[in-house]
Structure formats: C-alpha cells, structure tokens
Length: 205
Image 1 (spheres, rainbow, N blue to C red):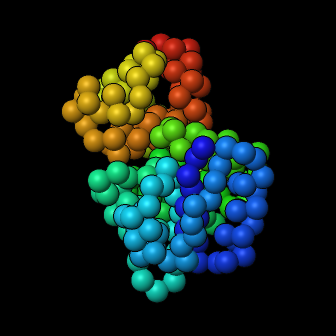
Image 2: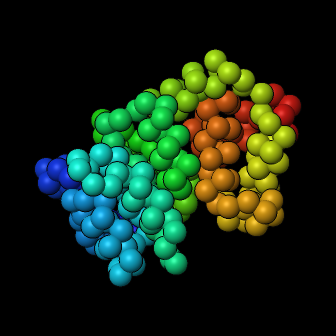
C-alpha cells in the first residue's frame, strides 16, 4: 500500500486527486497539506511513501523549498511534482531539489496513476510534455552522454537501483536522479528500460 500526501494550496485540486488516487486499492491518501510548511511538518511526524507536490503555494515557501527539506528528513518520502508550471528553471529546480518526477496537472489519469506507482518506488518519472521540453533543451546544447551519465546508465542496465548506483559511484541519490533526467532527455525516452535500449541501439553502452 502506497502512503501518499497531497500538497497543493487548492482544496478542489486535492479533492480531485484524492478521488482519483483512492479509486484503486493500492494507494491510501494519509493526509493533505495546503502549504509547503504543512507538508514538511506532516512528513516529519507521519510515515509517508510519496508526496504529490505542487510548486506554487502563494506567500511562503515553494514546492522546491519543501522538496529540499523533505529529502533531508531522516526517513525521506519520495516527491512527485504535479503542477501547471513547465519552464526549464521549474523542472530542473525541482529535480535538483530531490524530486524523483515531474508531471503536469493535465496528465491523463492512467498516466498519473502509473507515475505515482513508479515515483513511490523511487523511479524517475517525467510526463511526455516535460520530457519533450527537456529533450529540446538539451538538443540545443549537446545530446552526447557524458562519461558519468554512461556510468550511471551501465549500472541501470545491470538492474541497480538509484540507491545502489549512488553507493557504487559515491554520489547522492539526488545526483543520480538528476543524471537520469538528463539521460532521458538526451535519448528522448521516459523510462529506465527505454533508456537502456536506446543507448544500446546507439552503441553508448
């Protein structure tokens, strides 16, 4: 059972997400937070597997601030950003803060549910629109995988988890997730399996 916290300043959004997420039997919404501060406070005292985090909460701390604080907790929840904002700065800021995924609020329900399952397991998740945006961004720069990205992808191909990769390469899990986001964007894919397959097609690994 995935224990989930909804962090969004709009009650109607939280209600809609709760109805969708609790339609199955594998997710339980253990709480709601209307502010970034409330999300951090809740997770500091209550076991949570995944936080669905908006980026904007009006005055006060942002979703990126909350993500940074959540990931610094002794037993940190995974964070999946669910927002309307899709600028490069927003996306990269959230990933660098420790979010394992970034999807937009207009994501179809089936894709949202799949993203929740993947993010709860600590996998990197990007909605198609976000992946496309990042891919365009890196195409303007460089689509060649760096030596470190190839190292990460080889370990992914060996079936290693983000935590295992971080330990092997002496990196933080956040850094591994950031590498994976860039790998996905460069290869034009949205999953670990697809990244490995595409890299093998190109002879990168």
